[in-house]
Length: 138
Image: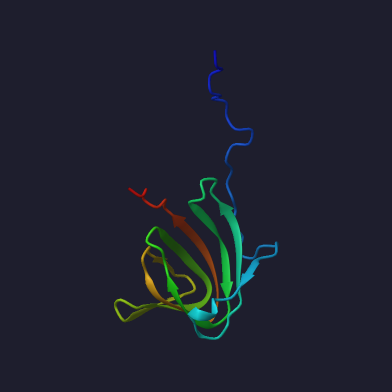
């Protein structure tokens, strides 16, 4: 006879995660890929404060120096962000438009978006990225 599956609560139940505007830990540092750069080679710093155990959600703080590069979001990935400092512009390739987002404003980059990300004044933002599972192949 097999033992019944455990229904006990996890040893450490989920807890609130504070996202500090100026984290004390070292960030992950990168730059836009060479083949996507339109101007500059800005330093980007990411402090990931939370990653869901399922791998479908992450949140934290991101900063970037001025620069301009192409972006392509996969259809299953969306990002909400809120600008704490600075100013950026999102260029929509399909519509030929640009949306400026500055300190005190938020925006969503939807899955499937193609265009360019332009940092006009050094930006610091909170971000939340949701990645839905890809549909199963037939």
